[in-house]
Amino acid sequence: MRTCLPLLALLVAGCDLSLTHEPEDYDALDAAERAAADRIFARLQAYDAYLQAVSGGRHALGPIATDRNRVDVSAHDLWVVVNIGDDRIHISVWENLTSDQRTRFASWFGESLDAAAARYAVFFYDFMAVHLAGVQTVYAIQGVDWVYSNRHVFNVERDAERMGVNYLQETDPALFNYVWSTCGSIRPVGDPRWGSSYNQEFYGDNLRELTDPHDPLGYLYFVCRHMEQAELRRQMYSSSFAAEMEVLEVYRTGEY
Image 1: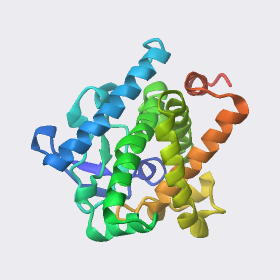
Image 2 (image 1 turned 60 degrees about the vertical axis):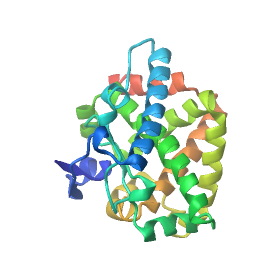
Image 3 (image 1 turned 180 degrees about the vertical axis):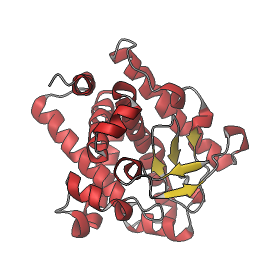
Image 4 (image 1 turned 45 degrees about the vertical axis):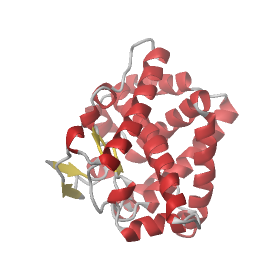
């Protein structure tokens, strides 16, 4: 199976960044991978239930919230977090990262590897699962083909995080606060390189650097910036999960 990484490559670079990867089914995973998959899947199911309730059944995440085999955690030595619209999400497990990758993550927070492992689980298996559910929401509402033809990935990621921020504020503010603090440590690490470059043009022009599966600091930095802007929007305009869902619906119809 040829899995293109990341989503941005598909939208603006013709899938020029790719790897050959055959995701393993849930039953073939080891204990650490299975525990991560269970935790991610639980987040997807909870998000999906909320999406269906708020939308009155109009929208759902689909197979990623009903089939554990659609949660791919089997990549090794690659730091993957992506949803390319094929009804599967990919998130790397801490134990499958290289030693250098684990040490690098811990260095962003100045903490031990054990503490970093716990933080990684929350950030990736909980928060990034919600973020990728937000991406899936964009696909579900606007259609994968339409998104690929009409939308830039910077804006897809932005809209996904608007959904994610409102979802967490409405259902799990403790997780929101934890991730807000974590992003507060990621920001100063990335600011020297990307602090003045939070825009669509830069994101598109620097795809390969920002989404390097060996070190995705750039991608995570932009997710954190999206989170900041989404929270600012929520506070300024009294936004909500339902309101952001309606924005996606209206944008798809062209009635805006």
